Length: 248
Ligand SMILES: [Zn+2]
Image (tube, rainbow, N blue to C red; front, side):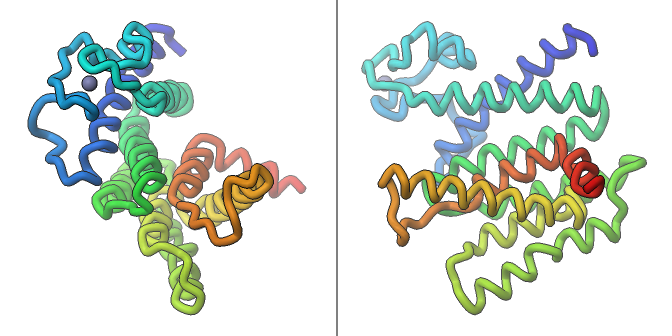
């Protein structure tokens, strides 16, 4: 571990997170993500670089727009911090390697689609496609998941879910595609573990919401953020969790 590198990955993660915020805002609204300057969602004022420094601008501006005083949602710095944190973890786990950059792309997609799914109950296909391509790129790295484990991983969770959703409904098409794409990244063992973790976390969250009387039995809860979190846990600690499980 080299502290300069940790700092470098932290900054790269914060800046990436700042860009993910742009995607989170623009993609559901159909605004092109690559073109144009950043603007305040409340007043439309063009933002200068000083308004766009990850996390710091939020603190300096005291969570308010410099031009219209509208409140800035704490989600913006939260996405930046989470991305920065994940990038540091990636460096600590995989060093400076091709794997680090491929997983960084996967995690960036997972964070972005989580927030979009939470807001809009939809997972845009483009993220599943990018994640799937990243899975295939992982084949170029020696010592990773083999191609047949990936192929089984693509179908291990997605096909049973597809069958269940055919009979009962309630499972989003985007969730099925996300499991297929992440199965390519993780292979069949870890995608099964992801399914288990995501279900447990969603159940705990749902029960907690009902206990707090914020949700009823009919409240529709997006599953994408739980899948994304479970897949991230498996990227960082999946093999450790499997080893612990197998030791019993
Ligand atoms: Zn404003």
